[in-house]
Length: 355
Image 1 (cartoon, helix red, strand yellow):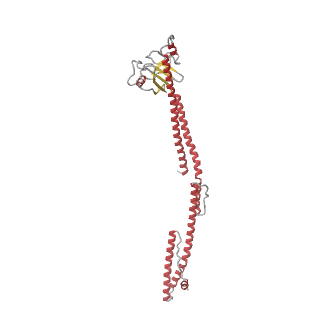
Image 2 (image 1 turned 120 degrees about the vertical axis):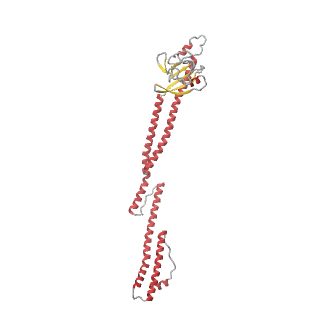
Image 3 (image 1 turned 135 degrees about the horizontal axis):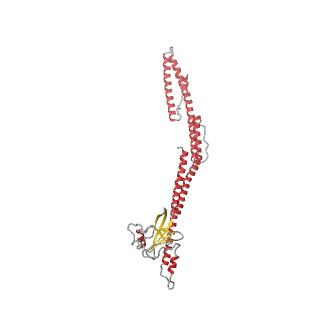
């Protein structure tokens, strides 16, 4: 995998993670707010129904008979199914359905089962002949009706549609309940749209970040490509005089400057090697020539014995000088620097030896 691909994937991955976290937070917040709005409306509706129920079933003022019937008739848009304390009453307000259970213990053969099974049927036919929801009563409902448990929310399904029910105690009754019901279809649809929108924004943002990261990687890696081209040029031409243009003060500019310095050091090293070879050939030529002359003299059969001894001694000395010179050259090549082999010279002795 190339560096450009890794940079692109790293940028896109970082943006995707950031967008995913932000989208998750937004989704949870939106869902919580929508559910809170439903819960607040359920509580307000239940409190309003309880207040109207208490007002409609209070004792009529003196001299005004029949006022209860008027209040009872005007408490909801849907007429009550019964007025006795043992019956459930259904109604509908501006935001949803509500239900009043004046006495939980008097409903359906004297109370609730221990398992919380529904006592009345799940549907109820009103006086107008319409069918409405009648969520089952649970053991917790009796506890709420008697004031032993706080109000609570629960989710149900009616005809395949999700709904939310709020149950609270009827203040004007010793064992009564008020339940309000709101459908969650529209709320869940809104949450679903928000979920798909955030998912699309997350994936689209990651894709856009990947494309922008690809463009940015190309721009960032342009000096690197120039550096690679220069390296290939040096390898192909063996020309150490090439240099990379340096612009800016970032890390890539510093890398290009360091590469130029490396090329300069290599060029200097190459020149030093060439100079070493030239010096070595010059230094070796003289002793080798003398050594060859001595060997040629020793090969002459008419050479006197005394002169042969002198020539042999000179050949041995030249061999020792040649060995010392080769050792110095090896040391110089190994250390990478010149060897200062200068020593005091007696000019008169040199002239005498040459004569």
